[in-house]
Length: 154
Image 1 (cartoon, one colour):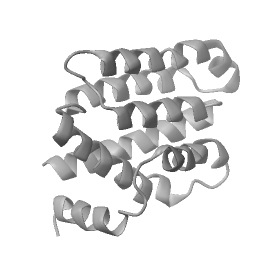
Image 2: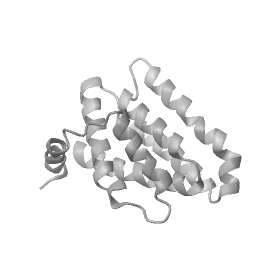
Image 3: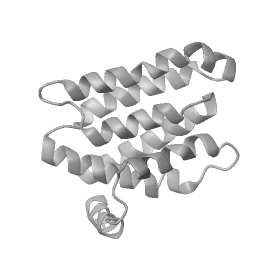
């Protein structure tokens, strides 16, 4: 079964759990609470849910293009590589939070570069990033989302 077929099957299976604000909050909360044991769903099921929704939003609104989403991922990786401990996290946290303004700008452009769902998901991910370890979890979750998106889009 190809990723696109898996995505369609998963979308039907998870249709009751659309990527609304509550679901985004549930997923992003795991970045913080998953210090000892990271739930596998963070990089599998939940990442696929996000990818399906972002792909669908991109079809409707011509936003969430791979290059734009990759731009935000690359910047997040850059920060994650700099921030290896809690002291460094506190030092660079304001700059990490500034990424929310960059996402808002990308959404406000005409045409939109990112959609509402991407903006909400990303902002909640940044909000939940309260430590170097949570940043790493968000980065890995984002990486999994990118993998699923590539599989869905081909």
